[in-house]
Image 1: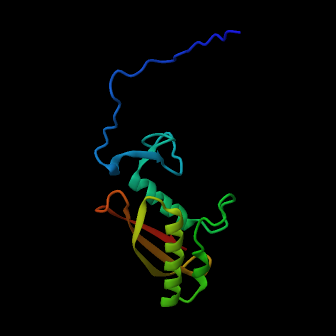
Image 2: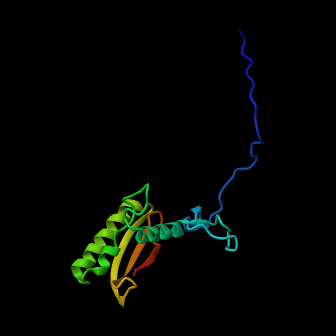
Image 3: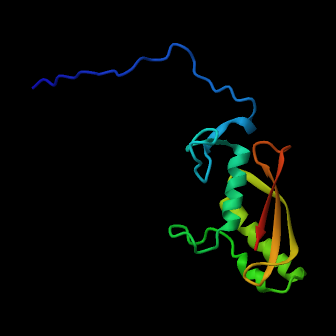
Length: 155
């Protein structure tokens, strides 16, 4: 019994080499920007983002998510809100730094935590507790000379 083998080719092979003309690794497109935008914004709903922007938004998302809040990733996030009713002393600040750095090292890919600072804002938040400001200084793994900062307020 003879088997009839045919090959179907769809499309046309490119005649020129395809290359990406990114100015630097910092400017290259790596994914979608979250949260998704509106049609009015530049890039529309599915606006692209670069390495630095992706890492920055990932850090903010990590810091503002309470551990156990995400259904499929119950360990994702930080438990920073529990520190709002604690005394604002060096012990509390060290516990906050430990919480943030362990979550950062576990979930943020492509960046290194360079410096972490915790400050009291001195204000009473809406829940009656303290308000804190956490500032992270990070560098991208692919470009050591670029340092970026993310500031998150816990109220």
